[in-house]
Image (cartoon, rainbow, N blue to C red; front, side, top):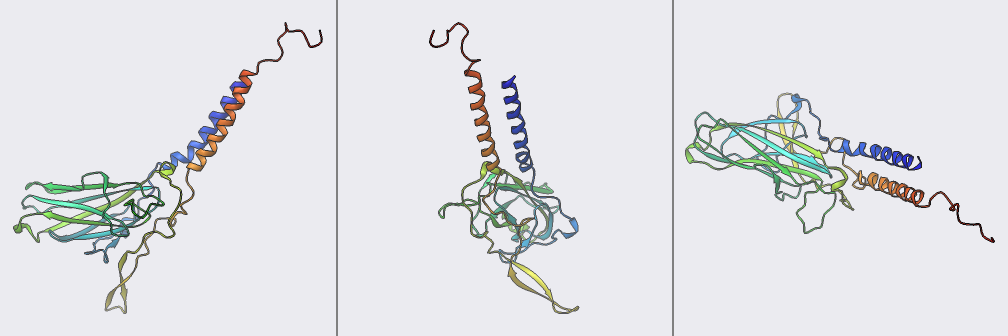
Length: 269
C-alpha cells in the first residue's frame, strides 16, 4: 500500500509538470487582423516592410524585383517562412528563391523546406518555404546560429529568360513560429536583441503631402523580448529531483522489510 501511494504521487507530479511543456509546443503566433497586414514589400534591407508573425502579407511587383520583409523572432522559436508567387498567364520557365537573413544580415540556412524552386511554363503559381533552426538565446561569436532579433525575408527570381523580365507578379508571404521550449534552451543570453534593421516610416506633414523617412525598427514579438534565463527546463529539473527523492523513499521502504525476523532470539538470551 505504501509503494502504491508513492507511485501515485510521482505520476501526479509528472502530469502537472507536463502541462507547461505541452503549452510550449503550440504555435506562438496568433492570427492577426487581415486589415493590418502589409500590402507592399520593400526593395532593400533598409526599406524592408515590417511583418508580424501570423500575418498574411501581400505585394505586387515585377519579375526581377527584390522584395523584402522583416519580422521579429525570439529565443526558443523555430520560424517558418512561406511564400506564394502568382505568375503571369504566359511565361517561360523561371526559378524563384526565398532567403532569410538575421539582424546582422547573415544568411540563415533552412533546416527543411524548398526555398528554391523552378516553375514550369504552364505553372500559375509557385510555393516556397523555409524553416529555420531554433533561435538561440546565446551563441559564440564565431558561430552562425540564429539569435533573437530582426529577421529579413528576401524573395526574388534568380533564373529567367530576358523576355520575361518585368512581367507583373503578385506574392503572398506568411511567417509562423513553433515554440520549442526548454529542449533548445542554453545558458546565457544576449545583452540586446539583434535589431539593427531600419524600416521606412511614412510621416505626413499635412493632409496634401507625405514623406517617407528612415527610423530604427521597433518591431518585436508580442509580449516583448524574453529575458533569456527562464524555460520549462527548470520545471523538469525540479520534477526530476522530486522523482529521484520519491524513488529513494520507495526503494528504502521496499528493502528494509517488516522488522526483526521472528525466529531470531532477542539479544542476551
